[in-house]
Image 1 (cartoon, rainbow, N blue to C red):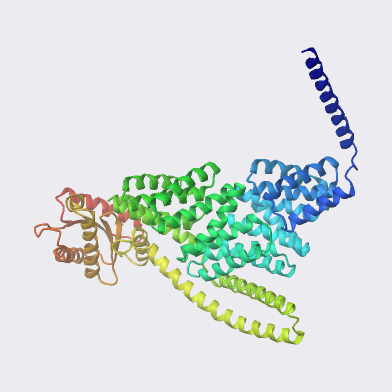
Image 2: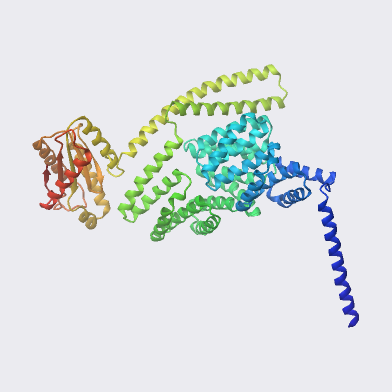
Amino acid sequence: MTNNIIIKINIVWFRFFMLLLFLLTSSATYANSSSLTSSDIKSIQSLLSDIKANKLDYLLHQKELTYAYNVTKHKKHKQLHLEAAALYSELLFRQEKYTALSTHLLEYLNNTDLINYKSSHLLLLEVQLKLYAINKELSNAQSLAKQLQVQVKQLAPNDKIIVFRAMAYYYTETDELKKTLNAALIGLELAIKEEDIASQGYFFRKIADAYNYLYKDDKEKAIYYAQKAVDAYEQTSDGLFTAKAYWSLGNVLLEVGQPKNALVYLNKALAYFSKVNMKKGLAFAQYSIANIQYLQGNYDTALMLANKNIALASSAGINDMHLASMILLSDIYIKQNLLNKANQVNDEVFLNLDKFSRSIYKADFLSKRYKLKRQLNYTEDAFNAIEDELAYTIEHYEATSETNIKTLQVKFEVKEKEDKILQLEYEKNINKLQATEEHQQKIIWRLSASIAFIVVLVSLFLFYRQMRQRKKYHAIALTDYLTNSLNRRGILQKADECLSQQSLAIAIVDLDYFKAINDKFGHDIGDLVLVKFAQAAKDTLNTTNKFGRYGGEEWLFVLKTQNRDKISSFFENLENKLAQYCSHIEALPSKTHVTFSAGVAISHAKSDSLSELIKRADQQLYKAKENGRNQIAIA
């Protein structure tokens, strides 16, 4: 027993002695700033070079990169350490450790020695700009973006690529997709010249995403560039960006109705994101797969994936995916005829609508909200949803469409950049085949002439088409969705124009007991009555007079006359027409008479404003109702 105790005591003393010896040795080693051997330096340089050239994956080699960062910091090897610090910042960004990254960047970007190491400095600034953008620190991001733009002309080609990578990311996050496209095309041209395959993949993907969101009717280009991104990244060992390229291609294929092909790429993306536990990537991939399950009618699977993604995106603060997954959940409930559940989820999304990053996402959601609210007979909510949808659609259209000669020139310049890239790719292929210089020149000149001719034709066609679309959307914005007459905004605009030209009469018309029609016969019949009233008004009015839906069952008329008899005669004719048209509604009993009350204000002086006339007309309408309805009051 005593011998065992003595042995244990000796073991404890031996371990203590060895620990003390290790600490003393470690202290001596770290005290020596030149203790990194040439072999250590070469090993770390090789690691950093391979990661920088995308021959090694950041996330799958995070331990080695973290070690290189820490050891060079302790050993005080300045140049090697700053290079490691720059790459380590990208690792933190990919790990989604944004708080730690912010502290890291603050430490190194304040380092005065950093200015002497241009590439490392730019890599840190690239990550800083991405962090500003993703955290929505827009003033800081804009300031840094301008700083980089000023520097870019003096930089070497490889350093310019870093800047354009950063700019393409920044413009995508801030929804400036035309600028994304422009920056990515310039960066792609540089990357092809420098034979930087990984950066080519990055810019191909940004171009694909820009085309996908900018031009809904031109998905072929989005697919083309997304496939190019996949092809480029598959030549590298960058697993994260290869997975993102898979997701981009899968997403476009899903939108063009190829769910089976899309699923192949989305599952590849999901496999990598799961392997490295990247929450943002997981949220995007899972959402797309859930959407495919929904489209294929697998509602239980889709429901499970949607709920799973809501929890994931919510915990990670990924707003777009959180809201998109909730919208998908509502769609699934609708298919399962669980309308109350769908409505509850829809209302929750509506309360958080501002968290969507793009106006087109808001417009798409509001379109679905309108249909659901109509299905539930929530007419006012449906009416508000359709008006808001139009506003966001116009906002998206103004942000993404060509509206004048200047933006057409931008479009032409983008096309020219694409042509340059095509030329560069052709040159690379010709060089590989060792074609003669004369043959190269002939091909390039022929391609240039042909492409230039096509560019002119295509640009003119696009300009013509966009001008037509602009007129179409402008008309939609001023038109009431149900009755195809002017809406409140449209009729007020027409009234302002007419009042500035001559004196006139403003009338406000309200359908009598319209709520009773809705309650007794249903909102569908009520909607049909509104349509019939609009038809009657169109047939009664001449081309100089205007009318529009002022709100609900109220209408505003602009009559270019001050003659009371003519005004009275017009409304008598309108009453007869309305009775005639409503008699054709089979669901209305023959004894049901749809009537209206009208208040009219005649302008007597040029100083009369539209708001004053509307107020007077509204007062007269009130008198007409007080006196028993189905009559006209004129002042």
